[in-house]
Amino acid sequence: MKKLLALLTVFTFTFALAACDLEDDTPTVNLDYVNWAEGIAMNYLAEAIITDEFGYEVNSTEGDPGVVFTSIAQGDADFFVDAWLPLTHGSYMDEYGDDILDLGYNFTEAPIGLVVPAYVDIDSIDELNDHADQFNNEIVGIDPGAGIMSTTETAIEEYDLDLTLNASSGPVMVQELANAIEDEEWIVVTGWEPHYKFADFDLKFLEDPEGVYGEPDNIHTVARDDVRDDLPLVAEFFENFYLESEELGGLMGLINDHQDEMDIVDIARMWMDDNEDVWQAWLPEDLD
Image (cartoon, rainbow, N blue to C red; front, side, top):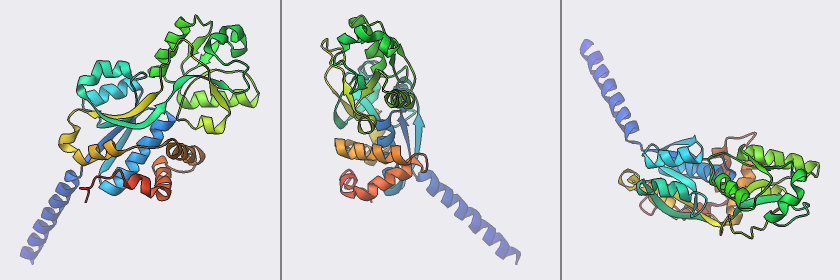
C-alpha cells in the first residue's frame, strides 16, 4: 500500500510538472495601446483573435504614446497597433526607430486636425481668432503626450491663435464635444479619423491653409525589433492585419454601444462573428 501511495505521489508530481511545462510553453503576447477609440478597437480585436485562434496568452496595457513607444523600443511590450505615421508619431520613430520594427500599415488615409460641429460658422483655422471668445479661448485636446497635441501647439504658433490648448483625454474630449453640441455651443477639439464621433455627430475639419497638420497619416503596427525571433506567427498576423474604414467604423460603433455592459474583448468577438471573412484572411498559413 505504501509503495502504491508513493507511486501515485510520484505520478501526480510528474504530471503537475509536465502541466507547468506546457503552461510555461504557451507564448505570452504583450500589447500596448493608447486610450484612443480606434486603437482600443484594433487592440482588443487583435487580443480576441490571438487568444482564440493562436491559443496564446495576451496582456493588454494602456499608456500614453511616449510610454508606449519607449516600452516597445526597450522590449517590454511586443506590439502597438496605433502608430500614426509619418507625421503624428514621427518624432517617436525618429527617437526610437532603430529599436522598433515597422510591420506596415493597418489603416490608410487617417487625417488629423482641428474639428468643430458642422453648425459652427467658420471653415478654416485662420478664422478662429475672429471668434475666440465663442470658443472660450480654448481648444479641447487629448492626452498631453499625443502627437496631435504637439502639432496643435505648432498650429497655435503658426496661426498666432488666441486660444489655449487644454489637455484631457480622448473620452473627455468626446464628452465635452457632446455637451457643447447638446446646447449648440461653439467648440473646437483636436480630432482625427477614424473615430466614432464622426458617426455620432455632424462634424467638420477646419481647413489648414498653412499645412501644419500635413497630409493624412497611415496607421501602422510597430513591434520590438526582435519580435520575429519568438513570435513569428503573431508578427505575420500583424503584417496581414488591415481594416477598411467601414470595418473599423463598425467595430468602433459596437464598442461605443456596448462597452458599459460587456468586456471590450467580447464585443470584438461579436464583430468577429459577423466579419469572419475579413479576419480569417489575416491568419498565417502555418497556424495549426
